[in-house]
Image (cartoon, rainbow, N blue to C red; front, top):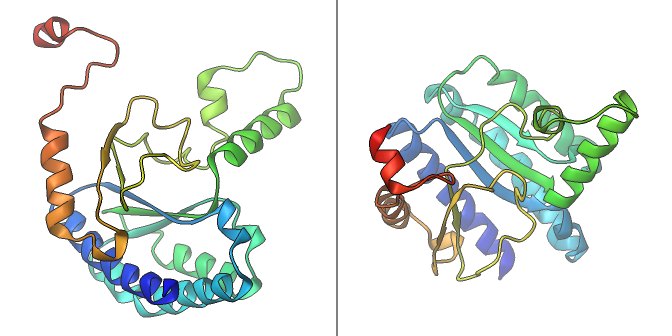
Amino acid sequence: NRIKGHKAGVEVVRKITEFCVEKKIKYLTLYTFSEENWKRPKNEVSALMRLLVSTLNKELDLFLNNNVRLNVLGNVEKMDFLTRNTIKKFINKTAENDGLILSLALSYGSRQEIIYAVNQIFESNPKGRVSLEDFEAQLYTNNIPDPDLLIRTGGENRISNFLLWQIAYTEIYFSKVFWPDFGIEELSKALCDYDSRERRYGKTSEQLKIT
């Protein structure tokens, strides 16, 4: 069932995190709980919140021993007090770590994030012109760079309201493997595929060779 699948997914997070630390990958972002996931059955949502709390309480040593800092993207205020409090304590305890930054997208939706950023700008600058920098400063991701690679698991060929603004030039890799079965081998395949790509950002291949 789905709850067992979520628990198996936690084990994958541990393995992927340790792998990224070993490979000196600086940023890892995981779509953990979407804004739309609030529509799921209440017992499943409650189980997910309990799983998140218990996992954070259990994995503090993993973060501290591997110099990993926790970052959170999303409207955490929608979560219950215990979950919010556990997240905030965990963020504070790992704040000085300067290795891998592990971002969990919690109660996250990209469209909602964009509307949030627009409202923040209207409140602070209702009549002025807005630059790209002004807008990006109000996004949940203002403290991390845009992703180089987005891996979509589970055989789905859609983005599902995830980082729509930030992935304008992100390379996308689709995997048929579901997250509970997604391991180091599948991640390595995705990274090898990414390595083979040419990222032009609007330029030609010839221009890249010159620079």
